[in-house]
Length: 171
Image (tube, rainbow, N blue to C red):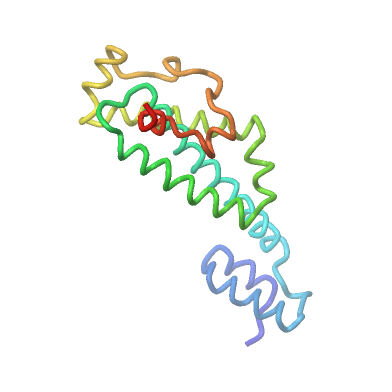
């Protein structure tokens, strides 16, 4: 089946999976003149950005749960530790498979973005019905962005390795 460049561009909007399959076929057949280069290049760029976004999400999860552990933990906090470890495990796999992302993740701007995401997570956590009492206890109300440090209180190394719960074991 022959496909025109115009039809291929239409597929991008209407049937993404078929668009991918058609572009793959054209590339394998070395029919480069028919490939939807504009959208293909954009998709390749987005694919790389997906990993950066995922790393920021995982860093945010670690930051949010570390902060909960250190400031709002009541009881043992096993769920927090499990969440931190799960996020760190995935983070480690991504950084091993895609080492160039580590440099991007270590940037002050990336850490700050992850922290800002963590703050939103903390605010939403306090709005869960089971945490309303904690919001009252620690803030007297639901917290806002102003209730948390503006700058990220953790380093990249701490995101990857800091385990404050181990101190309990050693004492």
